[in-house]
Image 1 (cartoon, rainbow, N blue to C red):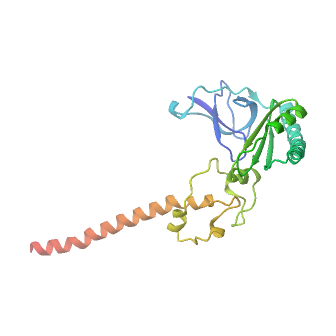
Image 2 (cartoon, one colour):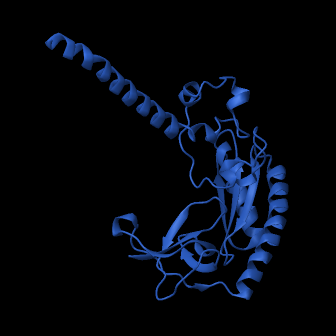
Image 3 (cartoon, one colour):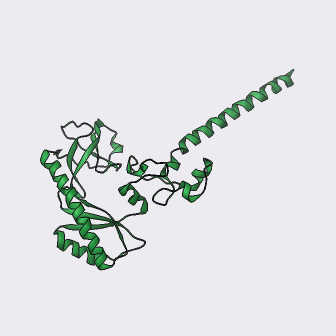
Length: 239
């Protein structure tokens, strides 16, 4: 099955689309239809053949390569997002809601505005949605996210001095446990092994496959050595 891999956000998930009769190269901007509406994404996996079981059917077809007008609209959307952020902040303050606005996103066709926020618990934002809909005259979605998603959206420098992995190349968050830090003989001081989000650093998982492979090789080497040590003794007994 021919597919093309498209990403809509930096370090976001890669989605497969039907390329049709067109051929795409990495880096191209394309217009596609998604569950959220018409969106502009970037090709990160060029046209290729994949096994049918790797695809979630039915695949939607790429509408077109992004034109100069499409790219100009994306710039306008970015400017509108900044304005929408300020307006939403004022509305949140006026309603006295216990929530922190993190980001605002316009869909490409401006059929919906998504406001991302964090909060300690559930927030009744129905009045806020009505106010925002009255201002922007379009569909409004308020999406509550976790602290890890907040760090992924905002980015920043980790304890290592590099930009956070989640905002540069990690498409999905993987489970991370304190056991991973113990197996690597790292300090269990929370301030040493926690990221900007306050959770265990994603990079603790990076070494796990190497540690497991190293342990397996060590075990095989030890078993092999034990067998070699037993061999002379057995031969001596026969004599």
